[in-house]
Image (cartoon, rainbow, N blue to C red; front, side):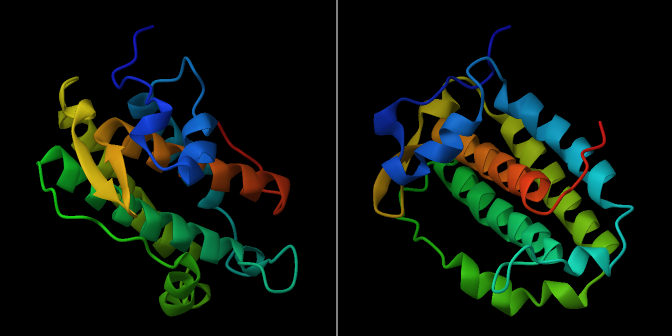
Length: 179
């Protein structure tokens, strides 16, 4: 299988994103993974009750609703970064405080269906954006969080970030994955 997006090298992203890049398997196509993950998470979360989705595995940790809201916020930010790099916008892009975003999002006040629908819509837009890029586009560079970053690395980071949180939902929250 040939990858639609070449795997980024270490110099293509800040080292603290390595966990997310490495979450994407060596033979996995990140564009296909975006699609598969979208289907998997929708099916796994949509039937969850709002009460169950308020579960926190430890005091001070996010609820399941918070995790889904965070996935949506992060996807928006990462995909906006990707768009800007793909379009040649050289403006340095800042980081963000995920905790402040979750606090401001008040996700526990929303229904699981609403949160999943929003995440699914944002993911669908990301899939369209990624599907529009050429092999050459993935080598384009921008500055994110003070580090040179390629468009391809941004896609791996975005995909790996969601994989990381999917694993947390399974391992710490007991989410059952529906294929």
